Length: 178
Image (cartoon, rainbow, N blue to C red; front, side, top):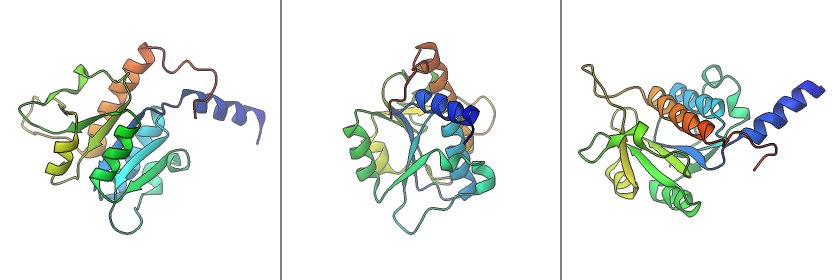
């Protein structure tokens, strides 16, 4: 490995955000999973979570663009297992869900340890997951559609988290927290 690449890897590791993650509840389409992993890497998330009760989870190398080499995917059999694990790490669990109690995703404090819970492409987040979440968040829609693609929604929320964390100086570490 050349010194320039080594320096780039050290810089990337120092900027990782170990207390920011995404949990995908049965997001089945490989291109969506891969795009979420790629976006997670882009904002410094080193680990994402997935509820995957069955066989091995599939990703698409083209959509992941190599990011699956840098972002660990931790699978859980149930949403209860995942939320218990994440709350055990002190994370607030934010469910992306259109409800009367949902708040605009930009009103959340993402400088706190945070897990963004994203639901399955067609049906969204399960009732069990909603009951376990700390808050519901929404991406306000002005047009006729009521939702965005799961990977697009993940990207918007993760980049808001990155903006807040960058403004708070959370990306300025000299050494890795991992």
